[in-house]
Length: 253
Image 1 (cartoon, one colour):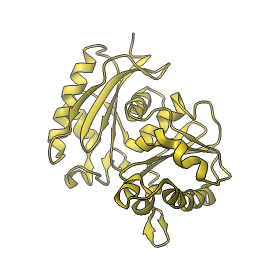
Image 2 (tube, rainbow, N blue to C red; image 1 turned 90 degrees about the vertical axis):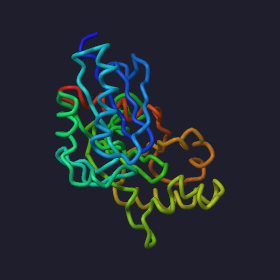
Image 3 (spheres, rainbow, N blue to C red; image 1 turned 180 degrees about the vertical axis):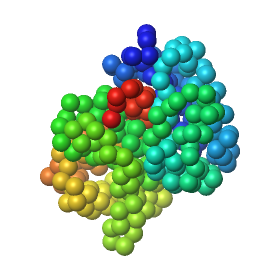
């Protein structure tokens, strides 16, 4: 295959860094999924070195494949403006340039939730859907991505909306459910408050719910009363890889 139909996607997280070679026409991994532990402390130089090792393994299968990297931070013009579960040394860093220097090649650099949302728009629940689509990932926090007519609107931090005097994700994330040992019903009441607020602000055409808990969507989605259709994400564990790879393709959103 040529680089016109494949790309390498790298998904950097607080505990693991994973990557794969992606068929951009089908959204399928055409290599093994390579995963290495995120270096302790999550320092920039260490993460770049681990990423370099993964890219080298995947590039052996297609040396000309473009590379996309997604990262748990607000990303603006290649700079990481926040840091979730990694070293605070990332804050304000020209991370895209750091990766490009370390890898010896150009990359596309993007927020991890944005990559997941883009993956759903290209290969998943939002494929061929028009209008405004909001993906939320329910996990340690609440990640979010806005897709409008297939175009990614970056860095929508909707988990940090203030609702009832608190960060929404502090009460409605899956971590909050586990921490407070909430039943599905009690958690759904918090999700209802959250999604109703987001719905009022944005009037989306579709909600997509991702994160590991989305595999249990039948436990909580039927308990929600919204005007907007809501569906579970198709791609969970591989969403970041697929989205980062798709965004690396020349001419992508």
